[in-house]
Image 1 (tube, rainbow, N blue to C red):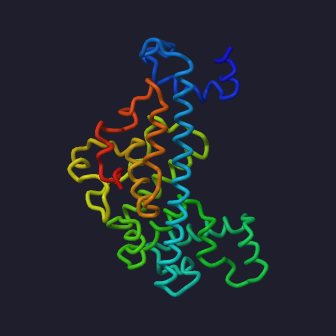
Image 2: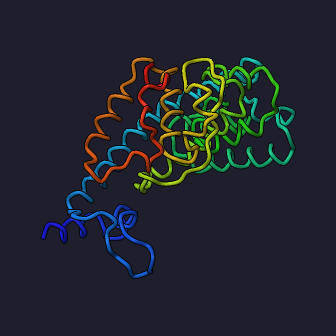
Image 3: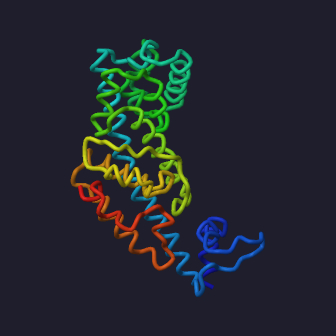
Length: 281
């Protein structure tokens, strides 16, 4: 009875994402469990853990996204002394990059119903687009990463943006933004993140603040396409934004609720993960 109720409220196909990894895959119709004595409630507990983990990650990414968005707008405005610096094609690698980014911003502004955008339209006719601190606010996090990638390398504002988040260069920051933005989309659409494979994220050997010892990264102990690698990067960015964040504490509580079906190794967690410098900050 309980299983029927849960299936109706959650959906069978959604629950399958948590059931299938525990079953044999030798034959298409083989539905035998790899582990014995698995109870339906334990599947539900795994589902609830995934839901709690998505919510924790989503809230953390919000802080990161706001901070990076603000820093990019600030550093380029200060360097160029232009409120609409993103409309300057000389700041970009290629003309087609500039055209594509500007087109996306124009599209977002046109369909936006944010009050600050409406206010700008009512008060100003020129330039047609609002200043960077408004226009970048309505660009998606992934779009923000693409904007930063399209801007020329080896420039002071781009270097300062990376430095502000404790990273040695903007190339790594762009990779982190795009990988974290993809994770954010999974969270926003309530998709499974437990034991999923993600976009490869770069784990730098050298960072301005405690991260992961370089010999651990070089040993390939950490899989860059697993959720643990992303969690390390999220925690690192959070430590620079809010040193008193509770991300580690909340993560521990969530992991403790997974029950016996939760296998941290499947999520990319090494046995000694809590000793890594990034988790001690």
